[in-house]
Length: 318
Image (cartoon, rainbow, N blue to C red; front, side):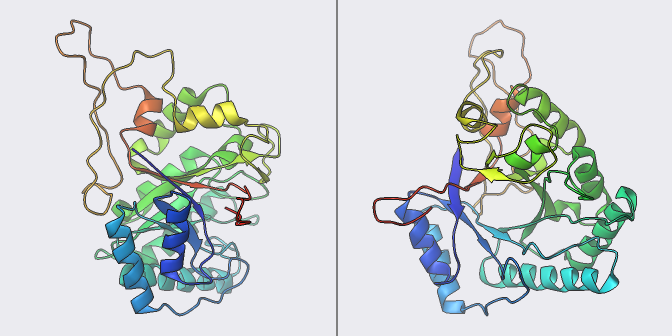
């Protein structure tokens, strides 16, 4: 089952975001936990948060995503900048745990600014070990990056290394941004299955917790982060639709064993997990692995945050 939504402003409170999501027939959404270009966070209103939780339960929402500000750099050269990132992320996760438990928290891994990729990954692991707690319910997501400058996280191997190195890796996942991975050199237009195989090999599809479904203004492997409206970029509507809905024609259609999602949309072992394809009843056909695109689409919990910029007749931009 697909869960789809968009990024919403938190300026009018938690419940208002839920109502906005419902108005566009979404069952999840993303919001910034604090000023995306600064550091200030608005104090949470417990009653407002409770109202959103009630609305989400009533309408069977999937977990929502809190997005960390862009100003954080978990692997900065300056120790003060790393401390700021650590303190802001710790506070954000604690706030989500307190007021919106069992949700997701997404952040950009950061830039190593000349220290080297290995040093950058080590600093990110160090920061995550400082903020993750065994009792927390919030899942922290590393976002796939485009590779501009000295960004960490543009290669699946880097994300996998960080996830394996963190002490509480069961509290972690990945948010895959389609624009970013395309710009980083993963050809999701012509070889989606191949890209998913690489992701599965280095990260594990069971760690895929959310997708930012974006088109790209820049050409393939440009290593530049410039989003386009869906269908108006170099990825194109056909490829976006394939990622979202279609089963690859090169594989036989087989009924899938659906992922069991618990009361908060998560399995005990995280988001989704491996689920076998089931052969047709009475079929003598040799059992084959589930098509990766189908596993990606159907057998995992996936929460899409779609950055549409479509103006409705009401004038509302979503």
